Image 1 (spheres, one colour):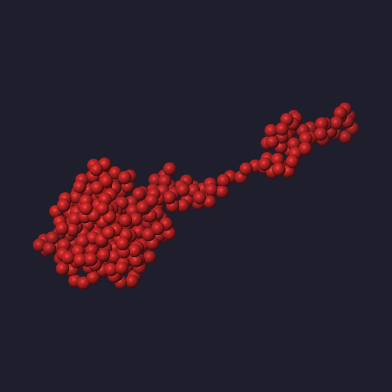
Image 2: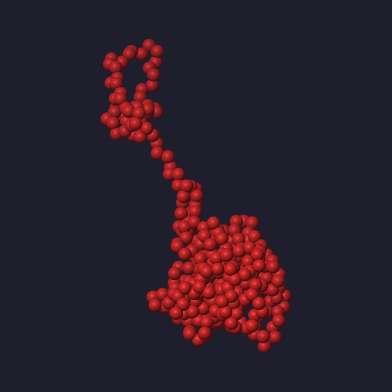
Length: 338
């Protein structure tokens, strides 16, 4: 038999009510009860309101959030640490990587390897998870902290444009692939994949540079406006060497959760992938990491590169041991399930 409303209300309010089940209506002709039931205690409107079932919190999310997100008003929203910018997944539609503008070649000029075929055949890429990207290139000051506390290897002071350790707010340079990768891993992060880097730089809308299609100027980035004298020459917007991070804000890539600085120019940036031609086939969360290959991809161009060399789709390659003043890195924090 179903309990009547009064016992339920009594339980909710903690009142001393009778809890015996309510009897069904008596059959016709049955004797009447010998005594009337005790009157129910009066309950205030406020008490009845407080006894109403408590609804589920409005912030409860229908699906688990990643560790770089938090649940807010029923939705998973960005929650990257300070100094990092949340970059969403692409969605199933993905984005197009590759413009077919770069020949595939690798080696010194003396090698005569002028390139055969395309290094950047257009193809569709889907990224299934969001990530947090460093707002700035890793600075010399941050690298100094890692050297002192995390076992990072200090860059050699062998070039006039070296930033370590005397320019703490400038991007660290003269770091090779393994030094960069090690740094990121000490802070629970990683070098970005090539696909992550390009998606973060463009949002997949086909723009030429992180800020859009407006021709670059020294307000956008630190790069070589005229003819490049030499890869290590006194080029760039400020006469040679990198600029302090985050000082060319007109060139930022703006995401809803924040701006990412210097994705074009200032210094090239190492990524995880080996440097080999794109296959041209659709890919999901691609990473082309071949330990037997010493060639690694670098992205974004540097202060000693032209406007074409700092395009968001432009692929560069370098031997993993390469250490030059125009090459640095930044890290990403990959999303994990809770």
